[in-house]
Amino acid sequence: MIGGSECMGKGTTIWPTILVLSTSSATLLVSVLILASYFRGVKHANKTDKTIGTAGFVIEKGAHIAVWISTAAAYRVGKTGNDVWGWTCSTKADEIQDQFESVIDFNSFCNVQVCLEDLAA
Image (tube, rainbow, N blue to C red; front, side, top):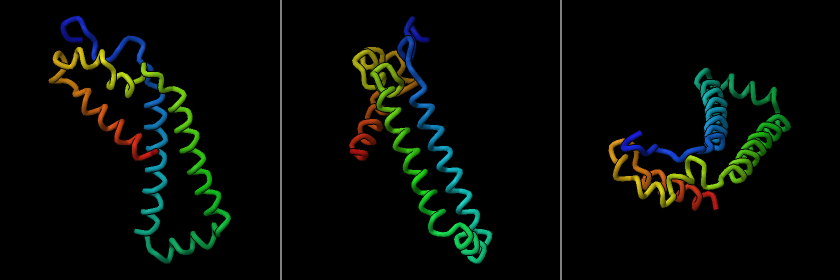
């Protein structure tokens, strides 16, 4: 709190951001495990691939895509403008930017969000 103002609005919803962070972390973990399998040796990775087979590959990729689609849908539902990302692009954030200049750059966060939405479209 600086000068009686809070960095984020009162009642800011954070669950959409936590959901995306959790999904990203799980995806990273799976990717690291796959990479570790290859570091153990291509022979071991190929053996694992043969064991799982095409059906396992399709199920894993399908689940991966389904999780990201559901995460994106839930994020869209939760994105009301009173969430962390929506708040950074608000006029209220612009009004208090000078007070929080040394803490957070709302415009920078807003630009990242807008660029990511453009890439996703």
